Image (cartoon, rainbow, N blue to C red):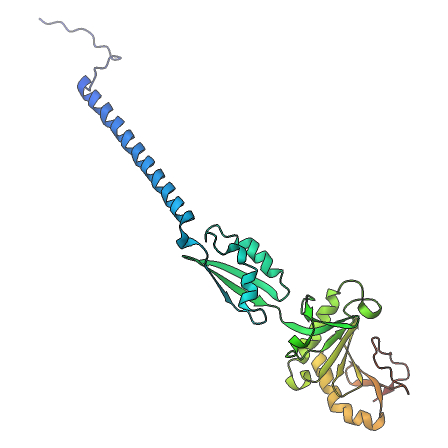
Length: 289
């Protein structure tokens, strides 16, 4: 009769033979080594590729393509970007180049784009002058935001723009900064009247000394037209329709106030007309039609 001893439940026999365990360890070690070698080779490859990318002459900027420019020539714009020419296209400082470009008076906005292998494209949006700002005895091209573009001269003879007075508060507008509210009012006047080409062609001057009353002067007409702050085109058209009848009653007109819809106030011109007025007289002695 055989006798069995009690089995110890906490005792477990090895299920792997010693020789098999050594082979498994060798296999794991070789996998780790192989992966390490692959990572090393990959790092070396990336390093060599980076060295090639940043040193090859094939990726040096050698062409700057300019689009959208009208007043500024390609050469003027490219001259502002000379420092990036010859540099690696990935290292070229396009942000700095953009800052230099938008500092140019004619450039309103600009976009830059890298085009492989060696081209930088420049997309220019130029400022559009809306009038001639009078500062002292000089005239300057100005856009709708109040930015002075350049001093007006013979090189800008193609621009047929109205003169804008009153943008700088103070006598003569010689000192101080341009008032953006006055610029906005003048821009609205010019834009509204610009909807009618025939009327726009006659617009000679805009005075925004009074923020609540834009005054305009038409070509071949000495009468100052008070237009208020809205309905600019409609009021000028109304004046043009009435001008013949008005002059039958008042031969020489100082100003016509068109701000009161159907009521038109006219002031006769004084005996001696001043050659230039910046603050037209108000309704003293006005006649009603």
